[in-house]
Image (tube, rainbow, N blue to C red; front, side, top):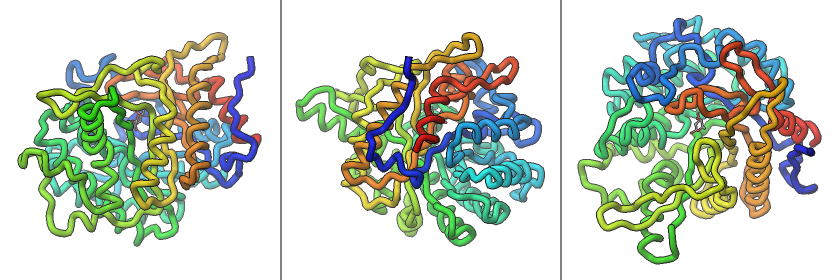
Length: 443
Ligand code: FCB
């Protein structure tokens, strides 16, 4: 069976100027928990019934010890870039100073990437907030935004010119809504009065850090990574369309509009005052600091219908679905990219995450993940379609380099293009990894 990924002959994505990469995040792969401060995900994992398989990130993929062979693996895939995140509790002490051991761990990685001509796309915050900051209110405390700025300042000075691109935050929607409004992610707070407040402080943190990054690292591409789950109405009737638009403003536009338009979506006026963030005078101009790129993560869409009590109700995801229950609907990806391009004046876009959870099985040292290849094929086509319609997209990162700790799903869901046997820590490139490699190297 041919298990190939391909693109139309004249596709801009076949140019060697288009950046292909693989992505990971610190808490999901590193382990090495003894060498850092605790973070909110350690605490969340230790709380009963939060993570489905009762697992934690103490060892994960043991990347803390295996990073050299992991860089060999990344190089063997032939990618142009590697997107990683920095563990804030590994690099900054409780008193706010650089932790030399922690910083050296990343400097060694960055130097090794440079030696091999692999561009480093560094995300400063992929959800592992130091627990001591959460003890002080976490993202509900405005002070945390300034702590993040100071962290970004120290890190970007220490890393010098080793970084090709900095993203301040990964998916502030997840940190704020999942973490502080519905509580299915760390720190597990629940309350409509929390979500928007946390989001505002995260966005403020982003803006404050952007200023610092453009001073300390003017040559890197500095920006943010946002996730989008495009909203579709359950029917053509006006009430469903309104419900879906409201959901779109609440879940998607809420995080991008402040950055590119300097204001929240107008639904802010419909929220009860106690659910609204506390916006101080300069905040919106800080948040809308220019960015050099926008990172977009896409996995699936969501469908909404109207309801008499609630603003919207999400209906169950139709088939086909991946192993995590997310509908496979690539059309939403190209429609998302063109619609954002119409709505906002955007910098160049990088697809910083896209991929599928599949119930992989390792048979005779092989993983024939044909469904994942199919997912990638359809979504690469969707990106290509958006480019053909005039959207400026410069790169694409597969989520993920390897199977890892999938947050509240623990180790049960596999997103890697490389299989990880958690008992032995042996890595095996899946068929999707081989197909990705072939696509990249045949350009
Ligand atoms: C995204 C996260 C990433 C990973 C994928 C599946 O929301 O950024 O860490 O868990 O989903």
